[in-house]
Length: 88
Image 1: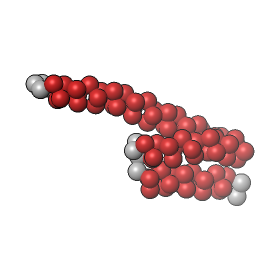
Image 2: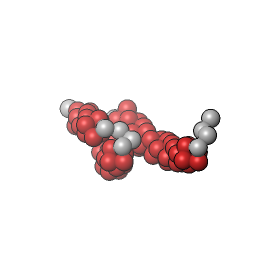
Image 3: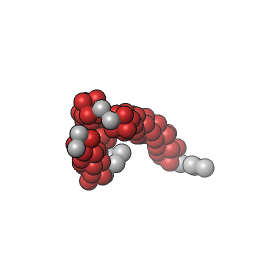
Image 4: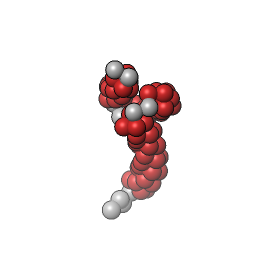
C-alpha cells in the first residue's frame, strides 16, 4: 500500500492510464476482428475497406505506446497480404 502522498498520486495516475490503455487496446482489437471476419468471409472489397479503417487505429495505438511500431506495421502488412491473396 502506498504511504507517501506522491506514491498515492502515482497510483491514481496509473489507474487512469490503465483504463485509457485498456480502452484503446480493445478498440484496436475490434478493428482487427472486423478485418479478420471480412477476410474469412472472402469478400475482398469489404476486407480492404475494413483494413483501411483499421490502419490509422493500429498506427495510433503504436504512437500512443499500446503496441510497438514494428508490431503495428507487421500486422498491417500481413493483413494486406492476406487480403491481396483473396482474389488469387
